[in-house]
Image (cartoon, rainbow, N blue to C red; front, side, top):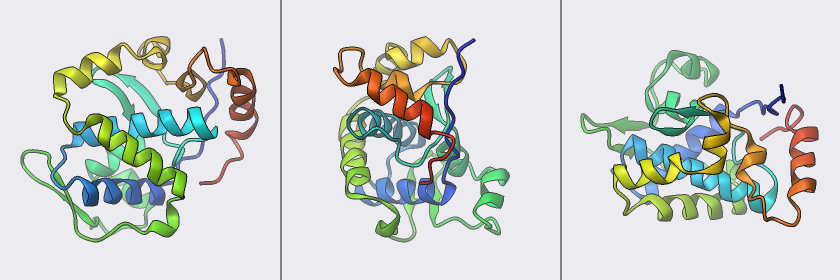
Length: 180
């Protein structure tokens, strides 16, 4: 069995990612935010060799699911503990699952390339329907290779990328030591 390299997710940075998206697309729903994060991470890994906050992705029934990001959006107690939060988060989720930020993101935690990738992810999903995103993500090679389990960041890099082997090796060697 091939071991999937795992990063230690930075929950604080994942929160800033949510706030960045909420600032740039107020009212975007949870599903679209999670998919924007996926496309942003996919672009960032492919171009820069690292994910934005090291989130763990599962090949969930509704498509790739960034676990920490989704758990924050759902106010999961484990993520609140990781943030040392008393339950208050600086964003609101409406009855229609639309997300609005209550403060601006802390841009000191996001690099220029993180923001570039987030902009790409948001632009990629903003006008797509749930159904269109569902079909697109379910056809994604990284999602298909995971067979309902943990997704592998190495699969975010296209097979035709000339530097794929080198990028795969960097992910394998650095994932357990990376700090976001």
